[in-house]
Length: 93
Image 1 (tube, one colour):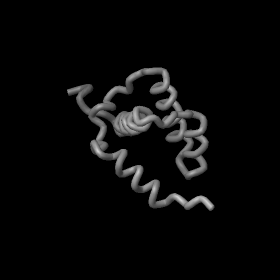
Image 2 (cartoon, rainbow, N blue to C red):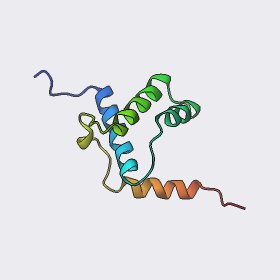
Image 3 (tube, helix red, strand yellow):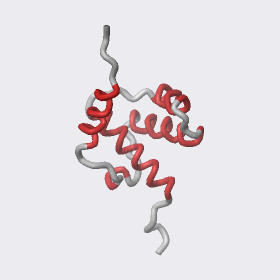
């Protein structure tokens, strides 16, 4: 049954695309270069950071990433991400 199983790379790209689309739809701008730089600085492998940049570029162009809709992210993932971000935020002086 050729073509019925996604590779790990396809699932990874789909999950990245779904997450970035959720963020974009919530009003967060996607800067592919800044995302790439931050990923590298956070210890991502260069190949994965490049995938992140490429997927963000495609999303900004309005392109759909195959498998994105079935990527395993919960419906409330944005709420979870926001809670984690606020828990790690430092108060301004």
